[in-house]
Length: 399
Image 1 (spheres, rainbow, N blue to C red):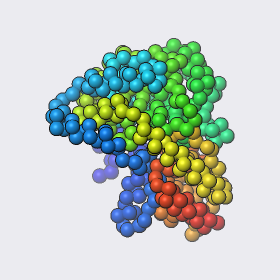
Image 2 (cartoon, rainbow, N blue to C red):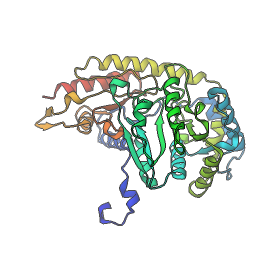
Image 3 (tube, rainbow, N blue to C red):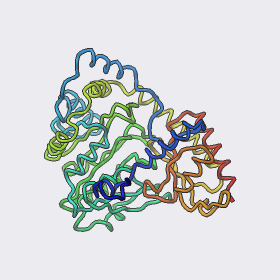
Image 4 (cartoon, rainbow, N blue to C red):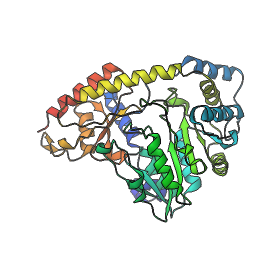
């Protein structure tokens, strides 16, 4: 029986599978058939979780941290996150304003489900992270996509944003550093956006800062420094600490919103893993030595992959200031053919690179830009070189 038979809810039928997860699944299926795939589709650091964090988790097991925990997270972890916000972002979120969740994705979903009604609109600058649109659909609200492009470094301005505000606008959601483009908003750019949002009474901001520590442009800036009382700041352990599988995200929010998210989470998942929380506490209280090692490696890889991509005719890339992605424009290849079959869009091109070039990327259509593909350089330099070589050969075969 198929989904179209009608036994599933309209809610689940309205959303799409995550394209990044779908591409990773397709890659595994080909690998299971013995095909050598270079997978540059997932946004996952190829570093292991630092040893001092793993040691803290082992100690937590030995100390029997195996009971139910407070829904919003252990008090000492929330206090450590509060101190982190003050120390690194100059944001005064008390421990009561912190909610720890099973990944930053749940933190975003919690905030949207607690704030949005079906009549509301959410401003979503494109390119955007794939899950924003689908979570908005689950709330019943409507996404209003604001386009940008490579010529503006994939960023929008306050003046552009203003054109999309309506009486129904309830929220703005964005990431900086951005997934999928790696673009980073400056302090001045964030200030101008905050001033615009502040001129309206009932618009909230979800600031997704999960890539905070992978920033090559200088100091990370949080929009909450300009519009604190209407910003939900999202972060987590996955990217900066190479803790993707530990599933720990968190938010700092106005107290009423934090309390609402605590209430909601109590009916869905309760608290995040007790062992993962103890590991997160060690990470929060540790040094940034391992973060700096990863960041330097990612920067080397960024420069390398950009140099390699410049050797491929017809590709255009910006220079991303953060995260670990490049988002090249590939539309010069649209309409070209392989074995008589035309590649009409980024979806077709990304699938062609997988099936013929054996390189997994993600179509930009999943991120709101149908002219681009996302390539993750969270992989070894050897894998990156091999992947770009295969991409170059595959594209040269098109006619």
